[in-house]
Length: 214
Image 1 (cartoon, rainbow, N blue to C red):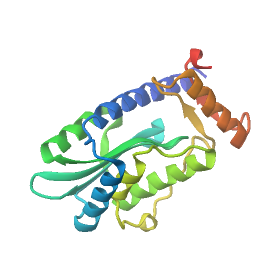
Image 2 (cartoon, rainbow, N blue to C red):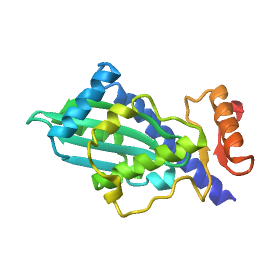
Image 3 (cartoon, helix red, strand yellow):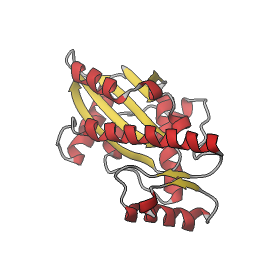
Image 4 (cartoon, rainbow, N blue to C red):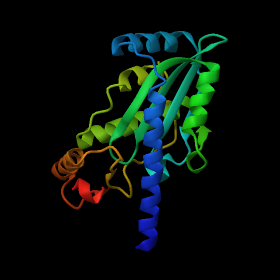
């Protein structure tokens, strides 16, 4: 039991750090409208090849991580999509599409990566398969992806997730596993737990939440 508690505490610390970095990274995004960003992402996907595709290596161990996709538009610009993906429960929790200089792109990637959850390269089809699978899993549980999801996901373009032969399992040990974030209000925590109870039944999911959040 102590070992399991330590593992859960470690997951929660890593998730907290990943969420903090997501907030900081999002501030680097541009302020265009969602429709404009969606159009930009689609245009970049139709004209430029994928030069970067990375994922948090430990995403299925800690339950949450980043998918980063980049298409070089010019010697100075990278069309960039960043998605914060919860593969245990909530699907796409955050994300953005932005066009960056190569230097800024490298800076953001370096800022998001860390020793415990380093980035590894991944085939674009497999990255898209993970994102789509997490969104589908979360949707079945009653949770919609973040509002920024359409524009960020559009950068995948016509990449076919079915061409990835790797199979991915969502949830944790066959069940949804909700880990509350540092900025989740008590009301939000109660709502997530209520939705899970309604969808899968009490005892059929796991969660960790701050004591004052219940």
